[in-house]
Image 1 (cartoon, helix red, strand yellow):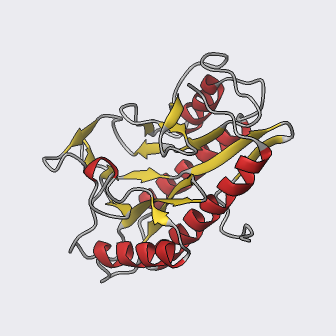
Image 2: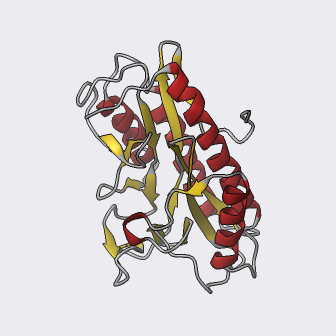
Length: 253
């Protein structure tokens, strides 16, 4: 069932989203050669908890950390640990915070030091595809319009969108209806209505769209070992168009 948020709900949820966005920003600033993924996770958790919020991912279905930190060919759900970031790595960080009874969810891919032209082009295309999808998150459109816009932008540049994992509704639960694929057919899927809140999150691979899940049950890698990037915002459908909720410059009470 798709949840429709009231204006009060959106006001409360926006604060969870701002905390999530600021935590992501801090995590991104920590992406430097020599820093471990566990240290980045510690910084993120410390900030979220200092704001009186809870890390959305910690303990979710048994997930053992506060953030998903995925390096190079790791698409999503990389578990933070002793791995140290190296010059030229690309590091995807996915962060959620639970506050005021609502979740905020966002992600971005950051370069460590100087990255290759290939890596930078992939990151740029993935980030840009997110905004192409957001442009279509207009009341009266359908979920398929979002996915089709992302897919078209990505595939025109020679990349592929991951199909095994998709975006989703978000609110009082971290994952809610509807599913928001990064591929699809315009005019298909649930209709977008004011008060819907969605996590739109293109996961884009330099090569094949196929992925494999490693033995820990979480870490998801590209099947061909090539790079992957991931960007995500939580957005609200409003009568005046889509509003990005996960804005680090947003206000907190």
